[in-house]
Amino acid sequence: MVPFDEAPLCALHWRLAVASTAGVFADGYGLGIIGIALSMAAPQLQLDPFWIGLIGGASLAGLFAGALLIGPICDQWGRRPIFACNMLLAGALSLLQFLAHSGAQLLLMRLLIGFLLGTDYVVSKTLLTELSPRRLRGRMLATLSIAWAGGYACAYAVGFALTSNGPEAWRWMLLTSAAPCLLIAPLRMMMPESPLWLVNHGHGERSRQIVRRNLGPGVSPPAVSPLTATRRGRWRQLLSKRWRRRTFVACVFFTCQVIPYFAVGTFVAQLMSALHLQGGYLGGLIYNASLLLGAAAGLLIVDRIPRRSFLIGSFTAAASTMLLLSVWSEMASAPMIALFALFAGVLSAASNLVYVYLPELFPTDLRASGLGLAIAASRIGSAISTFLLPIIVAAYGVRTALGACVVVLAFGALVCRQWAPETRFLRLGALDLENAA
Image 1 (cartoon, rainbow, N blue to C red):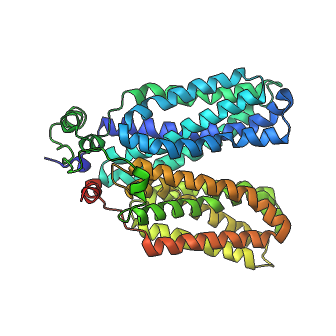
Image 2 (image 1 turned 180 degrees about the vertical axis):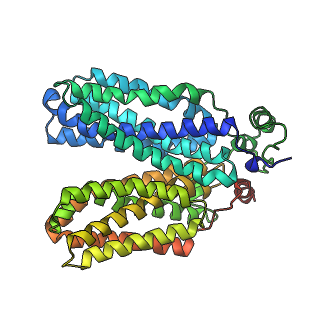
Image 3 (image 1 turned 45 degrees about the vertical axis):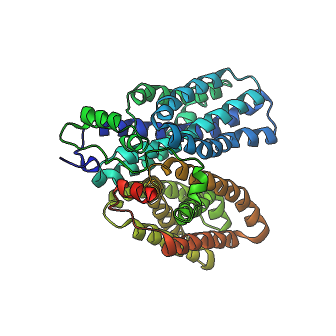
């Protein structure tokens, strides 16, 4: 009999990969479309800068809440209920955006959409982790990183194409965000529950039926874990002596990665101009192209090198390039653009680990909760850094802002070097046994 996590690639794996990556594409699209749509909606809805900022950040606030709160629910009641319905609900709310006639209505819908996208950040990673064959798990999860970037970029392309459709174009822009959600919803409804979750919650027979029906009679179901009763207080468990080090690594890794990723990425053109770079717009294009190339490169190498080496090496390389940019005062344009591009590529390649490494840190009964906590911590970091970076540049200069990014990256490298475990060849059942001990 072939062990469950060594099962050959089959139709179920492909369906789940499509259902998960399409959902993450919808997440990126839904977050990306609001920027260009809001600039056109502001005059019609009579939005002042306060309301523009409020609506623009509503999805991130909802995402924070969705990721934080849904983890314990998924660990308590299973992955499938949320995975099956969140895209359908997000699609319905996306359609309703077309009918918004006030800033308050649009704000409420963006908060709810963000909440649902936050649930998907957790449940897509969790379910795909637990059903993927071990040898392919890294690459299958890494495709989520490319899907998110693709959705975000596609939203801007579609939004730009619709800008000439008159003053109501913003409604059609927001309406398009329903399409990827609704297209993928039927496939998600056909996905089974995670067999790993089932055996950890006393449903061994149901787990065996799912494995036999979808993976074949030659594949053995996951071993029944000694942990058969659902535990309470999962956040307390995450902070217990057994798991708090992994929880700390997860939160620090993700937060230290997204702080420079979003802060520099959001204001890259302004940073290049502040550094007196000629052709800052071209530099910005090269920077964003490097993000896409880096994500693709990360997909190719994530299963070829140890996770821990990838993690520490990416932090060190990104910190080194940013240090050069912060201290080299007479740098010519070409090497400056090259360093920014290298920084973007390295950080984007390492973003694959968000989808691969984080789920491997936690046992089945804590996986969704741990992911939700790490995602929530990262959203706080990205929001604060994006808010503070232009203020620091104005008050203390661009090199001080870049130096702050160096400190953040160096701290991430230090924490990961000290405490990050290796998970490249991990069998997820081993973590469940450790949690039950």
